[in-house]
Length: 309
Image (cartoon, rainbow, N blue to C red; front, side, top):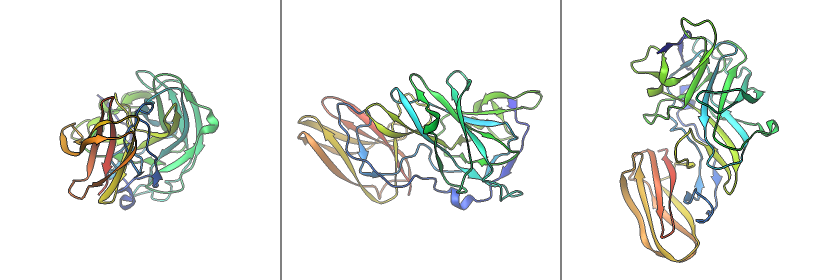
């Protein structure tokens, strides 16, 4: 177990960290036959993390990095944007906007060689800061990649960490660990930060990447999973689910909890080919992560849904 040399400090602007969300984005219905993301709410906010930042962070030194591994749902995948959430410190609240490098690294058992980097500076404290990285011309033709942030100054910027109980175990840190003389990569699961449990069982980094994938258009990648689906954060008590069927036949739409257990059946009927909309009342559900499953005679597909309140 590697021990970190730096210390944990309290993040100052917790009030603005309680809801890390994207702007409203309209998403049209998608086609069953050519899109793995079959069912999507009509109006959504895309996100991978569960939006529950903790009240601490890590003060890194110049040249240190933290990163997350991502796997595109299809290839080639062109990276277009990337973001992070900067936080301030109680003893240094005003330098959260310090310059840093967005770094993209080759896939492997740990982050590999640099694929490209861009120097940026955040403009919004405690919220998603998106940056256009299309000029780096990064296209992933197979497998995954790592995206991270490298400090260009000591201590700042701090990076927000997600403390939701759902853990993805794909966050990494590149520092000089206690007893070492040079920087090394270590997964959060192997880091002892003086917490009751290891770091990987405590927090995930809040980092996101946007890109273009064949047949899907622009998506937001969540951390690496066997099955990757875009997420929606529904903040109203009612929403609508839009979907398109290529042919007539039976349709079953089921709501599942984060562990895959059935919560309710939203629809079970025969439907004709074409576009359909299903009104969905979410007022009786607790906030958290759910999956909406659409089953037809041809396929079964999932879409991730995050109920924000």
